[in-house]
Structures are given as structure tokens and as C-alpha cells.
Length: 314
Image (cartoon, rainbow, N blue to C red; front, side):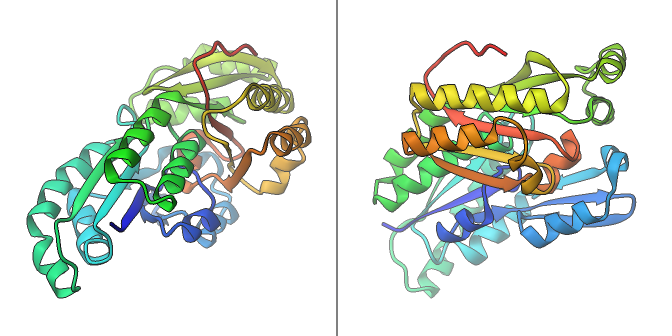
């Protein structure tokens, strides 16, 4: 059985990894001040967004995830004739409608696929498995990496889906914003009052940065640090400790809202690279997608890993 994988564009994984594993990206359209960007994780489009230096204007951007009709068309045109089963991985359903959209699209896809498969010379039914990563941005990386590994090993659709769901439950995504006022403005534009005016003003005045965690469909602060570089040091040190303690998936994801060389110059990065090399852990590094930068601001850092339950301290 030939199994494929589809992810939505807010899952931060490197373009090379996407190409090497034949992953299809469900795009998100982003509109900023009359200018449109298609977030399909293409490096050229991400670079164009960064080069435009939209800055704090992006917090009012409109994002348009793929509709059920878009997903249906994508699968019927590109995947039904090539694969016998496709595993769809989405960012957390509590923060994005894309998971429910793919579920709705699946009914139409499963109703209309037969003539397309027959024309492509493929026999047998077409299957879809939709899994909520229960995480965001780099936090979805370990689940994507593990799903790709299971597919390469020739595992059954049931095994792939079960393992993906298990990794999703064990995944931790951490976010360090560079601009707290931007994060507050973006949250307010979406009706989210979780970052208060007082908190953002105090944080800006004192250069206090929160470390936010995404885990099992929930997001919230788990620590605070003085300054972005100190925050990066704390986050990289934490990730190195988890690597040394042992990960459920031997892959660690990093995404940064800008030039990756800036991220690699941050304190603690080199030590994390050494810890991963010593433990045989693959590092998946990528610029943050356009959707991520619009929602949390340019210059933000996210880290994703999958491990046993634990209490993080920063």
C-alpha cells in the first residue's frame, strides 16, 4: 500500500524535509495591507514576506486557511491517483479550523475518488486518516518526522495513525516572542484577550519575555525571562536537557521568524547542537512560516520535541 502525507502550512518543518518525503502542503492565504502571500512553506515566498519588512502592520493581517472545497480539489487532483492512503496532519484544532475543514472535505473526497483512481490505473479503495497534532509551529515537527519514518518503514495506515496520535500527545511546543506588544495586538485582533495591556506594557518596559508552551491542545505561559537572548539561552538549555534525558522521537524542531543565521548565533544554540549530535537526535531547522510570523511576530523562536510527561522549569 502506498501511503502519502499532507500537512497544513502552519506545521514548521524544513522545505528539504518536505521534498525528500513527498509531503503535500495545504496552503494558507495571508493578506497584509492589500498585499497577498501564499503560505505553502515555499522558501521564496517566506523570503519575500521577510524582505517586505511589514513589521507591526502584519498583526491586522487576514489569514485564509484552505476551504473544504480547496482540500477536496487538492486531494482529487494530486493525491487520490497516486496514493492508496493519505495521513493528514494539522496544527491544533483548538487554534485553527483546518482540522475540522479536512474532516469535512474527507466525506466528499471519499465519495468522488473512484473514477479518478480508475483513470490512474489504481485499484482498491482510497483511505484518509486525519490527525490533530494538538500543537503549533515547530511543536508539530516531531509528529511530522515520526509519521514520515513510519511511512518509509512500510507500516500500515492504522499503525501510522496510532503512532502519530501517540506522538501528538507527547509533543511540547515552546514559543519565545520577540515583541510582546505585537503578540498582544495580534491576539486582540482575533478576539483573544490572553495577553493583557498591562502585561505587554510591563513586559516591554522591563524587557520581560514570556516563554509560552503548547501541549495537548492548550497554550499558556510556563516561565518568564529578562531579554530575548536570555530567553533563547533558557529555552535551548531546557531542550538540551530533554535531549539528554531521552526523547520519544529522535527529532527536535526549531523555527525562527527570520534569517536562521540569527537564530544560530543566539546563546545556547551551539550547546544544543552538540547535545543532539551526542544523542543521535536529528535537528529540523526552518524559517517560521508566514502564518506563524503573522500570528506571533517576526523574530520569534519556537522549539518542538516529544518526550514523556514532565514539569518544565525556566
